[in-house]
Image (cartoon, rainbow, N blue to C red; front, side):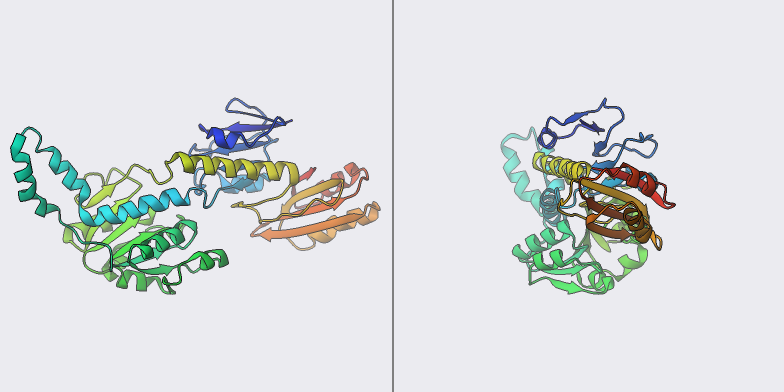
Length: 386
């Protein structure tokens, strides 16, 4: 029997992935795995039993990644599960950044009580809310992951000229990207060429304040900027200055903060990017499947702190070793099998940064002695026998 702790209200669709081998709930103690959405876990003590945490979403800023790695806890996320939901809101953001629909709606509400005069007042005042069409305009997409590619393709179908920038473009994204999109290799070209710019990159030390006074200075006058990725990607002080001068026409963000709320030209959406029932179901289901495959088979898919590694089962027992990525570790592990006369039927080893993961399938022999010896190797962080 395995135990899964939930830290937020998790979609029932996702929880149904767990069969009767699992006990699931927010009161579970000594859990084998955990599913979390937005709950902050940085101060959360983890039991020694905890093997993995799955984030039902893409961002993992609420999880102490370094501490998890040190304790041999695999951290998963669910890239792409909420991509369509975010894409749809980005397209809505493109439209409302241009057509002044929101301010027009708010103005229309003030006409209440004018009876038959409302129609005339609408015709007289609507000119204040005119805005350009997006067809024929240029869109720069910074970050061509699952969401960025979907946004680029949708914008292309709406008649926009799309430029995409991503120095880490994956083969999968390259295949999925519409052939009409123009792949840019210098981010400054995005700033200089595009009428609209949308950001779809993670928040890291290198991307913090990606949009700043220098990058804004390179942009077209009247540019419209969209941020549905992370609030820290935009320097709000530089943005407010650009809005006041007219350099930036509008800023649409899914991350409101006190300093930009109420600023003219800012459209602040209350983090609704993935707030659809379909997205919550997709994220929870993917997170659950990732946990199940790791707990039951040792496979790692969509981890943010350990290498992606999957291997078909070919023996009675599978030994899974999380260890430091240092020289001679694999030699030390396999040498123990040799000296104990235990045959390895299949082996796979991969590394990621400072950490590595080795899976070994062996026959029906008693592996307890081998496991104990491997666990004693300097540099081994965690060992499991499945």
